[in-house]
Length: 299
Image 1 (cartoon, helix red, strand yellow):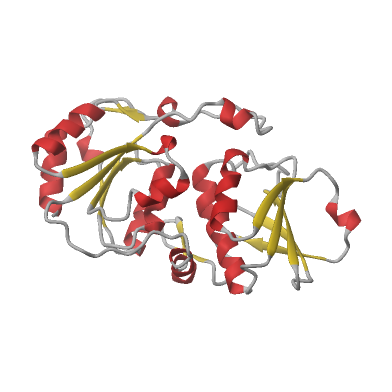
Image 2 (cartoon, helix red, strand yellow):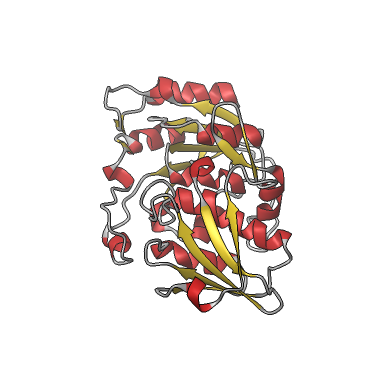
């Protein structure tokens, strides 16, 4: 995950007026399509957006004009509008020229999970951001607001997987087949889960994040008590939550990365492995009675 990324941003040494950044990920393979896929929401958010914002903050560069150039081998595609929305005065451009031959006055900075002050490695080989990075990220002007008011009825956010049309990736010159949303994995009895949670008397929000903007996704997490979601990129929003919540990650649990983030933020994390009724590795049926019991015991 982000501990394996090599995000190299080439920056002007003269920071007096504007900053020019070239994004070219994974020097080893000279491509975005290996591990550090900046067009993939999780990698973009966890391994690029948060680190870029923290770097700019730490070096007093926020507020200056920032021109971010995407090399032809590494475009963030439909995610670029998030950069422009979350980082003041930042504009994203495609850049086809050899920047080093045009401007020799450059400084190369590599940020990764091992980069000093930006992250730390925990024993199970998952990496989460340092407390400093999370604090800076959560204090940015566009961050969701803190709300510790106790809800009379527990409020549950159930994130269902949707489908982002493949053409939204391919039109941005990404040269691999991207399987996404419910094509990769799904919960096959969403409606049964929703009916059970309503029957149990919970205040339920059931949403598909692929249909929402970045800001709308974050807004959905502002005042919840319980987050239920299948393993997937939507759970990276755990970084944004500012109240103590219960996190239930439905199978298949392909990594323990979201557990690591939850534990770092002192959320009550519950792996959903015991909730699965069928044998399919990726398209999962959930035992709603067991789920209801798990929630009751967690509250």
